[in-house]
Each structure stands twice: as structure tokens, then as C-alpha cells.
Amino acid sequence: MSTVTTHTEIINDLLKLAVDSGVSDIIIKSNKPGYVRLSGKLKPVDMDPISCPEAQAWVDEHVPRVFKEKWDDLGQVDFAYAVEGIGRFRVNAFHQRGLVSIVLRHIKSTVPTFDQLGLGQTADALIKLVQAKDGILLVCGATGSGKSSTMAAMMNWVNQNMDKHVVTIEDPIEYTFSDDKSLFQQREIGLDVPSFELAIKAVLRQNPDIILIGEMRDRETFETAISAAETGHLVFSTMHAATVAQSLTRLFEFFPPEEQIQARRAISGSLRGFICQKLVPKIDGVGRQPANEILTADATVKNLILEGQFEKIQGLLDSSSDSASFSFNKDLYRLWKAGIIGKAEALRFSPNPQALEMNFKGIFIKT
Image (tube, rainbow, N blue to C red; front, side):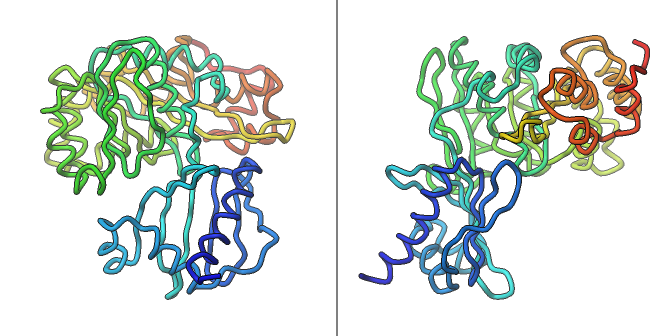
């Protein structure tokens, strides 16, 4: 058996075991057995260690040709990997201490629905947001919080219910959409367009109704999103931020102090909402449940942003009786009361556990 066949088969066998077990991520560190993340917990796989030459050979063989120079020069690379009969994966390969490591995330072939993700009552708020005719919607959370799946479910609802031309810019493509009522054009960085910057510059000439940007990564991307929103497009994107308050802060970090007033004007005019998400272990020990914090940018929110009174937004989320805006604590309390998550886990994932403890005792902020 050839060396190429051996390392490919070893890793493919690991991926098959992972997919069959329902794991979300596979981690390969040279000279260690594979590790998987199941329901948020890291577990080793009972297998022989994968050597650095095997990991290196696997990346060298499967990294797309357009990314080969990046891998050789920078020592890190993102790409997609598909195996017939097993599935499709988002790959990040990198060097650490001179050795090769690989992290693969399983991309499920079927685009999820709100019900399949367990979003329940949250879906009503999401459906209201996706029906906006223009503006910017940001899905936020830490790595592994289910941002991409929630955004895919929103796109799936659009596809089933609205006639829209959707252009996506992703690195790499995670979920693939089959045209239903909407028409999807999905562009993968490196394969369909050389760089993220070129894709962003071209997207407004491609006649989209909706633009999906895989990640809001820099000022240029955000300014393009604002320009698109101001010219009648609805823009979806993700951002690494834990809460609505942190998400808002991150947006303004794109702009220097002397441009903050202008930025407040632009953001208050274009923002339609934030959807922040965490995955909380269920009380039955099987899987994880999305918990959300949602801010719908109504006239009150827009005015607070325009005036720079960001500190008042969290209080608004905590006290709002509007089902379109609510805090993490409100959603965690709802999930606990429904018997979906336990009290200890709700407190562990709460950004304000002291306030949530008061909620458990029946004490709430007056609306």
C-alpha cells in the first residue's frame, strides 16, 4: 500500500467515525491520536497517533492548488475537503512548534430549518428580521456557537418563502443551497474569486437582493456592507462577539476616534439587528440547545446608537416586553422554565448570572 493511500485512509476513517458519532469538530495534532468535539466536550479517539509526516502529506495532497503557495509560505491555510460517502468539511491547517495540526469541522449536507436547530420561539424574531427590505443583520457568537447554522436556517427560510437573488461570499462555502423560490450564487474565496477583497468590490455589480458575507472581518468589508444597505440591499454576516453590547463595540472598533460621529450616523441608519448565540448543554445530556440574545434595531435603538448611549441598550434588552428583542438571561430563563436546560448550565452561560439568579427567584426588572 502506498504512503499516500495510507495517510488518506487513516484520516478518512477518523472522519467517518466522527460523522457517524455526530461530532462537530475533529482535531489532529501531530504525534497524537485524533480528538473530536462531541456536544461541546473534547474527547480522544482510540487510535494510533498521527505522525507529523502523515499530517503534512495529507495537507500537501488535499490543499487546493490555488492555496498551495499560501500553505508553503505562511504555514496556515483554510480550505474545504469532501469525501464521497462521508461528508464535507471546513479545514484549517497550521503549524505549531514546527509540527502540523489540522482542525476539521463537519459541514452537514442538508441546510437546517429553525425547528431542526431547536430555535423554537426565537424563529419568530428571526423571520421578522429576514423580511427587512434592506440593512445589515449580524449573527454573532464565539467559534463553535452555531452562527453559520443559524444564518443558513435564515437563508433557508428566505429560499422557501421569498423570490430573491442571493449572492454569498464565503471562505470556504459551508452550506450549499438548491434554488427554490430564490436564486443563489455562492462564491468561494480562492476557487471562484482570488480574494475576499475582489469579491466584496464586485458584489454590488452582481444585482443581488441579499448579500451573505461569511465574516465581517475588517473596515473595508463593513463599509461595503453599509454601502450595500444604503442602496437597497439586505446584508447578512457573522462576527466573533459574545453579546449584543460586545458586538456593537466591535463595530465601532473599525473606525478611528475622529470618525465615531460619522460612524454612529451610518450604523444607526443601516443596522437592522444583532442575533447573538451560545450553545448550552441540554438537561438530558443529549446535544446542545441554542440560547439567543436578539436586538431588533427599532427607532429607540437607532436613536441610542446615534447619540452614542450604548450603555442603555443592555437595559433595554433586559426590560423589553417586545418578542423581537430580548437578552440572553430572558432566553436562558425561558429554556430553564421549559425544562430544556438546567439551572447550573443557565447560570454558567449567562453574561449576568447574579441577575439570572434573581429571575429564578421570581424577581424581574419592570417593563
